[in-house]
Image (cartoon, rainbow, N blue to C red):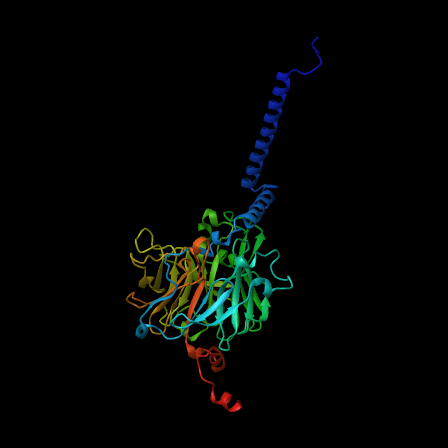
Length: 459
């Protein structure tokens, strides 16, 4: 006899379908409501957005960068050749070349021989854990920029790939890679030393506040700061840069930030003090002023530190620029990462322009045979003989070109890895340093110079 009180098979199946549909509808409504709140910036929309972005960043940090060879510290090698691949000795600028790659800086001679190496993994620079909380493994933390001193000391900016913020700190090392002092701010990209020995460096941190009048920017975003340190690492100035640009005569540039950059609206990537003799011909130079590069604004500009005001800004035919420098003739030279679109020479080029007329007076765009292409990082240096030393980071390549575009020296990073060693480690930064910049005692330690008469008498 049939039990009328037992639920039918069809009824149970239907109930489960209806219940599943009801739950799915609730989830959809919750998702849509959350999306509307996030878009309208009504409580708790901003809080939901910040939690979502934080979770996404954490997930990316934990999963997307497990394999360091999949990060932007390594790229497919464009050649099997390593070290110095060619040189024209009588056309080169004499000196030693300093370059950074991984947690190391190398000083090499014209033949590519390593005459000195500084090596300090991040975990050993902050062994007490007082640095970045939960940092990336040492394989993912690297020297972004290095500045040498005559006695062999070295200033080093650390960055961590796959992290946000990616700035990891600044250290001063001695010639034996021992830490002299540390600055724990989230330093990134660039560091330079002024004529008076003060140190200029960029830092950033995540802020969660609305910038009045700029609703196009994310509430939770990376804020860049200019920090000035004494020669022994004591903080003297700490200046937030987005508010300064936002209240300047060039505030309209902040409204032009693209949608994918609203959480990192400036992406300041260079600072150069303008108190040096070689910058005197630039009309906006002077003590207490620095040249800054804002990648996401496509602009460079001059900041007066005491007044905390921008005194000059410029946009030009460059895109995603890095490393602008003032030349002794008052012109500005920079690395233009993306400005050479849709040509066989490659996307990148180095430009020299006259800031009074904006005329491009010189450029190196690569050649169809040797395309020139680095979408991020990279640098340039105008040498005293008129040549230009160029760092093509993605290719792990450093090369020197004449004013006519002839390559007279080329070096390809010998550091390889990945399957079949098919990947080349990037070169973040390179600089040609005259031998006589260094103290004789350091050169003797390198096996290059001869002891000074004073040292010989002491011995």
